[in-house]
Each structure stands twice: as structure tokens, then as C-alpha cells.
Length: 278
Image 1 (cartoon, rainbow, N blue to C red):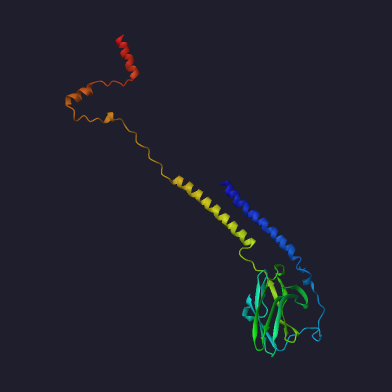
Image 2: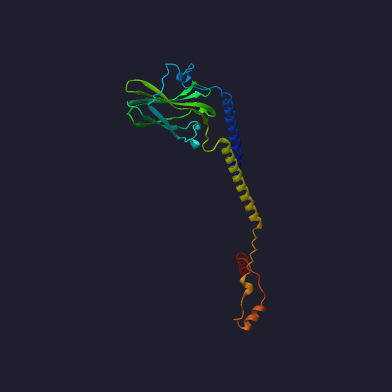
């Protein structure tokens, strides 16, 4: 029982120390909020300011309309800006409508995080999915795309750019910015965090101690209030309760007049017999 008490007292203290170490580690990470970890050299692209009048810029086609629909997570009330959960997949569908008179071929679609103050600065590039799907005139097609925001980006706003690359039957290439808005990367805690878990463990230990103490108190009180057993009466010999009613009165009177001889042990009677024979 003492070992159980000691375990219940030491376990919450150990969990508290572990939680404090995690808090210190998070504090050190918060000091590096301004430093963004990038995966590979492709994510460190810093472009020059590009003007819309530059002929080298690939523009979209006037015969094509695009739409985007986020399926995970779903924007609240249809707002264009919403929160993305760090470490959880983001899924959306892109609709491609060909309003022209010639065929278009959807080549790839890619997404990237940009610096919100300047969209020419790339923070992270996601995989470019190849489709190579042909869309006939006056037809439309739907393309699915998904990515997972890095958990290191939690708590920061980023510009999300979704770009669709396609070409026409003549070989002219086009680019369409399907989505180009600022989103917030939020951290979602699943289940119990460290503080809540420690609180539940502490409450559980306190409850177990209270139950054990209550059991001990009830057992002690029951022992005090238990009635003591009455002493068992001593059984008297049957010689004192002999019924003489069935005997004749002469025999009863003779028995009462005869002196009572004390009981002797077998050894004493044998010794007397030996002395009489001598």
C-alpha cells in the first residue's frame, strides 16, 4: 500500500517536469519565428519584380474560365480567406471551362506558399501534378489537388498561390492563377495536451487516495461499532441435575444420607488396594 501511495505521488511530479521541458523547448522555437526552414534549394527562389507589361510573362487565355472549390477544409460562409490546419491535408477541386473554338490541354497544376507582403518571394513549393488532359471546345473538366502544410509554419500567414498550366492546339502555353489569397496556418491540437493530461492524472491520483482513505476509515469505524460477543455460559456437570423422581423414596433417602466420597484417581485407588493386600 505504501508503494501505491509513493507511485501516485511521484508520477504527477514526473509528468510536471516533462511538461516544463516541453514548454521550454517551445519557447526556444518561438524565438526562431522569423527564421523559415525551407526544403531544398527550389524553395529558396527569390524572383525579381515582374511587371504585367513584360512580354516574358505567361498569361492566361481569354477563352478559358477556371473555378476552385476547397473540399478540405471548407471555408466558412464561402470566404476566400480562411485557415489551413498545419500537418493536415488540404484538398480542392479546380474546374477548367473551354469557351473557345480550339482544343486545350491541361498540363500541370502546382501550389506554393508566398511571402504575404511580396508574392514574388517563394516560401515553399508543393508538387506539380501532371494531368496532360485534353479539353474540347465548349467542354469542361475537373482536376483534384492536395497538399499538406508544414507544421513549422503554424501560427503564420502566407500567400497561397494555385497555378494551372495549359496550352492550346497551336502550342501556345498559358498560366492561370486559380487562387492567390492570404491564408493563416493554424495549429490544431488533437486529443489531450500535456497540461490537460497532467491535470487528469493528478485528479485520478487524488481520487484513488481519497477512496483508499475512505475505505480504511469505514473499516476502522465498523470494527469499533461491532457488538462484542456475549460470554458463553459454562456447562455444569450432569451430576447436579439428576432426576430422582423415578426412584423409590427409600432409595432416595438412603442416597441423601450416605456420605459423598471424593473422586480418586486410578493410581490412588491402585495404591490403596496394594496397601490392603499387604
